[in-house]
Length: 383
Ligand SMILES: Nc1ncnc2c1ncn2[C@@H]1O[C@H](COP(=O)(O)OP(=O)(O)O)[C@@H](O)[C@H]1O
Ligand SMILES: [Mg+2]
Image (cartoon, rainbow, N blue to C red; front, side, top):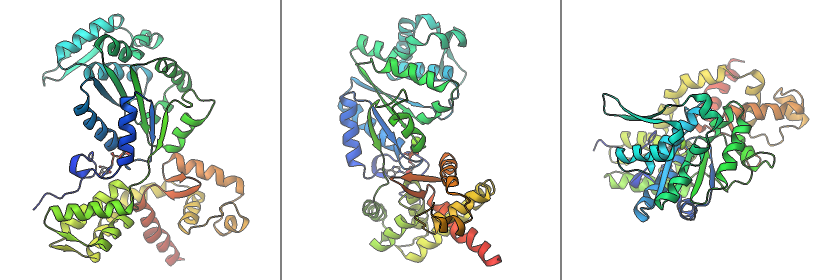
C-alpha cells in the first residue's frame, strides 16, 4: 500500500476531513439564513478546508444557494479585487460560458465586459473600462451578487479567504467603508470573511471605530482536540491495514502541537515508516525528520530576528508567565516593561507567536521545538 491515508498542503475533504461538527453546523445554518460570518485562526489550522466542506454539503442540499469563493492571497489592489469579485460571482452563478457572457453583458454594461479564449481553452473575462474609472465607480460590481440573486431567484454566499490582505491596500480604511456600506444593504447575499493573522483581523472586526465592526457572527476557530486526532489517526491506519496504539497516536498529536497541517504530516511520515504497527520510536524519528527538513527555513527566520525578540521567545519557551516582571526582564535581558508590548506586536505581525485569551504560544510547533532543542541548547552548550 503506497498511498498514505493522510493529506497536508491540500484541502482536507471527505475521509481526510475530521471533527469540526459544531463549526460545520453553525456555518451551514448561517449560510442558509444568509448571516454574515467571520472565521479567524492562524494559518493551516483548517479554515479553507472547513468552508470547502460546508459548501460541498450545501451544494447537494439546495441548488438555489450559490457559494462563490474568492482568495485574496495574491490580490494587492482595489481594482484587482473588483475584477476578481466580478469574475467569480459571474462564474458561481452561471453554469455555461454563454450564460457568463450573457450575465456580464446584462449586469455590468458600464464595464464593457469581454471574454477572451486563450489557446489552452481557458476563458477569461476582462473589462473595457480604465482602472481609474473602475475605482471611481465600482458600485455595479459591489452590488453584482445582489442584483443577480434578485433577478435569478438565488441566494448567494460570498466567501473571501485571506481577508487580511485588504489591510495592505492603499487607503484601506476608505475601501473597507465602501465595502461595508454596500454589503450591509444586501438581503439576498451574505458574506463569509476569513483569514489568518487573527490579531490584526480581530481589530478589523471588533474595534468600534473600524468599518467592519460587528459585521457578523465571529468564529475563532480552535485547534482540533487530541481526542479527535487520536481517533482519526487510529482509524486511518486501520483503514489501510496498519495499526497504531492510543499512546502513539497521542504522541503524534502532541508533538505536532495539535496543529492540523503538522498532525497530518507527522501521521503520514510515521505511516510510511510503519511496517505493521507504529511504535513510539517511529513517531520520534519521523518528527526529527520533519524538523530536519525545515531547519534551513528556521535558520533564516531566526537570523532575521533581533536579539531582543529572541530573548523574548526564550522567555516564552521557558514558560515565563510574568513577562513584564522586573526579574523576568532582567533574566532574559528584555529592557523595560514598555518593550514587552512592542515585542509582542512585532512577533504577532510576523506570525511567529499567537495570543489567545492572554496565553502566548508559538504559531509553529515545529519551530518551537527546533528553537528549544537545536538553537538555544546549542548556544548554551557553547557558553
Ligand atoms: N478538519 C480537518 N481534518 C483533517 N485535517 C485537516 C482539517 N482541517 C485542516 N486539516 C489539515 O490542515 C491543513 C491546512 O488546512 P487549511 O484548510 O488549508 O488551513 P487554513 O485555511 O486555515 O490555512 C490541510 O492540508 C490538512 O492537512
Ligand atoms: Mg486557507
